[in-house]
Amino acid sequence: MADTAADGDQRIHVGETADGDRLEFPIVEMLTGRGFVTGKSGSGKSNTTSVVVEELLEAGYPVLIVDTDGEYYGLKEEYELLHAGADEECDIQVSVEHAEKLAHLALEENVPIILDVSGYLDDEEADDLLRETVRHLFAKEKKLKKPFLLVVEECHEYIPEGGGVGETGNLLIKVGKRGRKHGLGVVGISQRPADVKKDFITQANWLVWHRLTWENDTKVVGRIVGSDYADDVMDLGDGEAFIQTDWSDDMVKRVQFKRKRTFDAGATPGLDDFERPDLKSVSGSLMEDLGEITDRKEQEQNRIEELESKLENREERIAELESELETARDVSAAARKMANALAHGDGSPPESYQATLQTKNEHIDRLEERIDELEAKVESGVAADESASEDDGDAPEERSDADADTEPAVGSGDEPRDALVDAVQDRLRRRGERSKLQDASDDADVTPDDPAGPAAETVVDLLQAPPVVTRVNAARRDSKCNDDAAWRVVSELATNPGASAHDLAAAAGIDVEPVHTLLRELRTRDLVARDDRTYAFNADRMRTLVEHDDPSKPRTELRDQWEP
Image 1 (cartoon, rainbow, N blue to C red):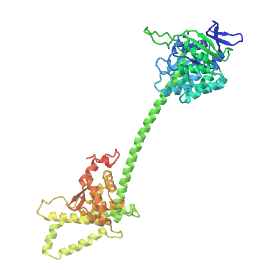
Image 2: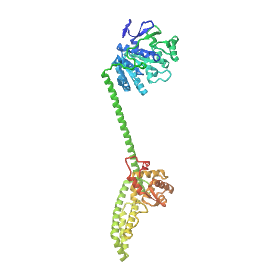
Image 3: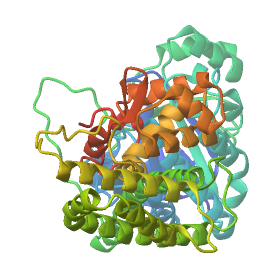
Image 4: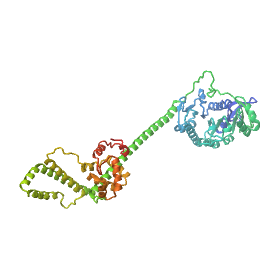
């Protein structure tokens, strides 16, 4: 219970002096001052802190306790406190997102809080939660200036003497130095005073020294309290302590603190059955407010995961599109270079590609008509021509003259003839001659395979297919041919199957050595077959690559090596 002293100050009764007098602490000094309570395990330091907290709660003053060992929940046996932490035994599980709300509840709604950091598996998460809660307390107190006590257990973990002080420790030191003027008090508890930063201890305006036996700790007592007490502190009984306070005339007092009223959750477990007392609950409205923060955090986390998933899918799609774009560029470049090589023979780009392409298409259309005429003549006129030839030796010459008059009409006109037209016309002419010979021959077992290689039109089409382009480009990169020269060689070989390396080199206008390297790389990829010293494209292999191509997958030569 709080008592009112003769000077009008409210005081709390916490024990008695060695003379049997009541030991009382002024409430305002407890709430706004800087305290330090120390003693070895079992000496009574946590009991002393609990007594001070019980008396403050009894007087109607809230506090916030940073509980590092989960030993203060016993206060809920008699008082309504919000037990916040990570364990399921807490009233609510909180994270750093709840820090501002916790500070608001403590200062503006007078809710006593146990901030239980003992259940966090991640020390950094617990440290972040404590730091942000204290930061909000300090910021709010600048405006409110309301007396409020912050209790920090095991303070040597945050403000160590030997190690580096982190951001949380620096904030606690700041509260110790400047919190009093704003109404924010702090008390640190530790069983090892030698491990606590001395700046924090020497700034305290009330100190409690329970039993200490370790030499380094007793040396601290000797330096701060006095050498006479360095030995006596080792002989103190449970709950007994030396105290130093700024509000007392006595420099040091030997006192006995009373036992706390609530359940001792920090007591060492014994063999007796452990019986947890009934604990008071906080109001449902407070839990709803904190629960909304938890729900909002979960929603934000789900949204983050959703966005990350979308981003990952988008990145995969971008990679697919980039692969498709690269393949399209390769195909486009291959088609351009093939057309350039066929049209000009020197690999230089045409002045008007579209116009040239249209001209070629028109030539090809006329050549298709010409082949139909030739085939019709072969089928219907061979026998008549042979009979007429026997009767009149001059007739063939007349017919040849007629043919000669007809053939130039296809390629005549103002349009210039080019290599592609000449090559296709030559092949068509040979095709007509072969058909004529086959129809005139009595031998029906002529070998169907053309030793010179597959039809050029088929190879030209296949060379523009993406999986083939990928391999040709790879062969070109691994050879000693530059880009333009390589495609001139490829174009020449496509339209002139059965050519030798020297023929291809002469047609491309380059040395024979790089041609050999290109042919070797093409053969390695099974695109070109060699017969003695002549070469031709392997149309069957190229057709297989095209048939088994999967355009949905990124196209690389390494992947294509595992395809049929």
